[in-house]
Image (tube, rainbow, N blue to C red):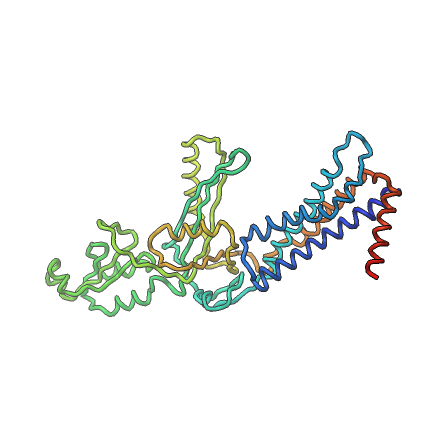
Length: 392
């Protein structure tokens, strides 16, 4: 019983105290330096996982190491107590501190209400948005497929399809301009769609999204080919499905933002090339179906992308076609659950993971005893006495 009380007082309680202080202090510094004052920028995986994981795993163990060295196993066959307890203690601190950073990012993110999607450029940047007026154009979507391998010995073959949908303030191409052009011309004006003579009724049935270009052509340019029928000029229309004999100069689009999301599938890397091609063909079909029915106008709110490697993959999708004007692109991810659920059960996971780890640490302490308990307690008392005198 004396051994247990000593281990509980001199090892376990400092273990808990140091762990909680590490979590609280690092989380506060994260909020102060990266969120509140934005002193510098880190990738989210570094700020939320790599750095806190190292801090949580290493720092508390360094502080506890002198005490852990005083432990000795009850049984000679038991492993080195320092290694076991440092591993358990490291995970006890590292896991909750990483979860805490992820919770901090979502809990402190501000929700901004936009009247139109273009306001995202004029208002102070926040993590979350709702928007009233927007028009995501699926017909102009950009895609990029990336293959990679992962897992021990590269056993997994990953297929990721990154989708980026341009978003405008209003219907694009602007249906009001198209309608105005149709109504302004003489009813007898010819309609030429994809180099084929059509009529105005056919043009009116064309979805605005399918029209890439529409221009009025003067009679002097139409009559040499169509004679008197072209004396009122023509509306020349080119749809997105038209294949030019000579690649034309396509006007660059300048969307206010991009809605981005990805599709993922993992298969065994040991499959043959033909089997992988078969899986990819099915994956492409599944992505096409999922994209077709994805309700881009029915999201609850939008979230800015975390600052990680995924950003470059979405940028690759946006730049996969030479039809986007140069400049920084704003990428937002549609979220389809209520804003209140953005934190999930992270707080419970923080407390639960720390409690489980601390309990396991305490149970493992029961396998070891403090060497020279009398001298150990005497040394702790002398250290406490010296600290008191120094304070005076």
